Image (cartoon, rainbow over all chains, first blue to last red; front, side, top):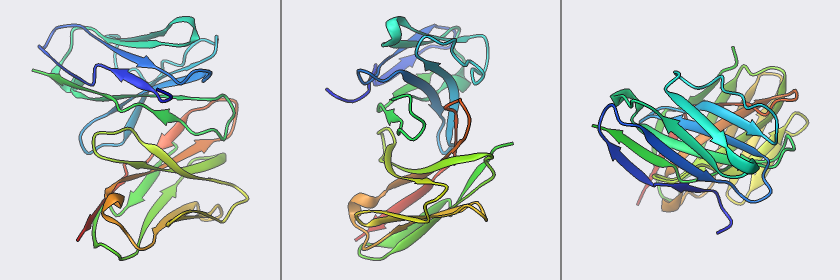
Length: 114
Length: 113
């Protein structure tokens, strides 16, 4: 498809386990963002990739969170030793580099930590 | 600190009625403001973008306004339909070389028959 694809759509795991969330951005989009959306809350910025530049990791809530983007395309968000407060919807978005371009969002991964 | 505040937090209207959603921001220096629609269980989708020089912009039954002096924006929905039920998120971008944006917490709109 032509949109941003995220997988899995739902993930249920036990506290303490590691999880990997995947994002396939729109082809040609150099910018990629990860956000977290908790129930009833706004989107919380996690990390931003732009081309080959060093990513902005300022939104990552702890060192249990990390992300990488291979070959300027697919991105993986990894959460180690998951905690119950990590339960949320994790959204990925991509965009062209120009400032007035919209972010195109995937439908997110709903993560539930038991 | 850059902030975006939206009101009301939630709203219920009858099908066919109009409604207006509000967004106040403190993001500076201002670059643009965008309204997104987020259906339940889906990612947000852009409705319209407002830059500093624009006061009004329409997209079908959606009309966005911007007052850059008072740092306020509104989204007016005309002749609401059941499919308008969603969360509407105001997003403001600061100018500069970085693409980071500030999201409002959204207004949850429910249109009932």
